Image 1 (tube, rainbow, N blue to C red):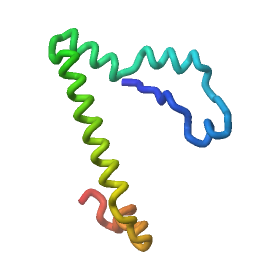
Image 2: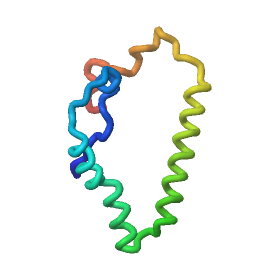
Image 3: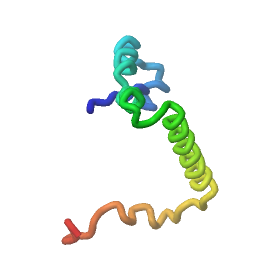
Length: 94
């Protein structure tokens, strides 16, 4: 499916710049892939709106737990900055 990023790149917006008309953003919001999938799931009676709300709540809780974990974790060792960023020569496909 085709998706669209509603929000600006961080740097552009902080400079007070707009690079897309509001109308364009609103048109794409009306075509939001997740909203459309949720509507279809309810229409096809695969899940109820309450089921979908429960999934959203569960995901929000999981994300919040991950944020708390990340914020409470010690800072990484700067010497490990590039660890696991690149594959070792000859390790492709392993």
